[in-house]
Length: 393
Image 1 (cartoon, rainbow, N blue to C red):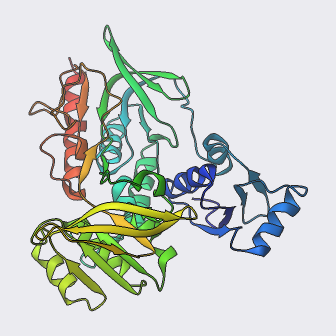
Image 2: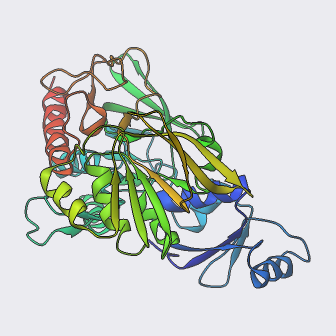
Image 3: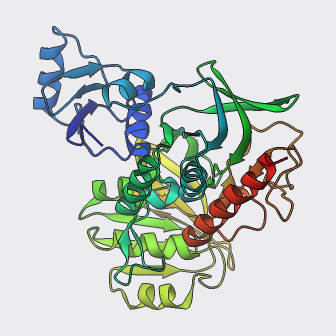
């Protein structure tokens, strides 16, 4: 990725700043953040480059160029991301850019098919923002999530897979023998088959104050936002593998991590539990439920928690809160003709085909998937092979 050294000047309360930071984080673009309300030099710079006006976000790139209040489309163009497909019709369109989708794409492209991948965020999916993959076969010393994503993307490009980034699919429909995939910018691309591999996202708690503080003290990605809390205290909400692994990552540079577990015990794998309990910088509090997030000056100031056994409440004052309480499938854009379970996970046949002919599903968005990178890759390969059989008819 180009432009990996840039600075975003803004303020905590600024919604456009939050949007720009979220977009950069999704694209795995590294940036420096300067709150102009806390940094006089930063405020002076913003006013200087904007002819005396205090306009935010102002984003300055490593080559000295800048964007002021850019849209996501303008940011995508500046970063050199392809957001418009070259063709109008493909043999296969893969929706999503994680391990399942990229694997399916490279398998199909290697067979000589014209393949398009459409991803609204950064290529690599959840794996790309995971600190480290230690259990992926073939990497005895483990591999960084970002490196894994970059390698998989490069491999897809090697087989001439066309990759669209910062582009969201909003609908898919069938017309006679073809499928049509519509993107948020109004374009529609035809295809003989499609694979839905949009993955899943972290669930939110739904506690009062949470929505207003997302990106301003409440986060769902320790790899993306953890470094902002160096030397400070944070809380992690959740008791599974993600909560444990991200807590271990945060403990590398924060002063203290307090894990808030709603149940009586951690539900992570034993190896993760052992590492968490052995770490002197991590405290685990069981039977603890978050009931409210509080703000001051647009930032997280306190977290109210309740002891689920005694009913007693307490206010904690961490600088940041990271929420890892499970996943929700990214399937809301799909038509009713694609059957899903009560939680939104796509129901598939043994061939991974959905209830809409020609549309297949793979990875975390599919009911019955194991939510592991290795199995997502396997499902992607299987889906591509099933598409090959489907296209023979």
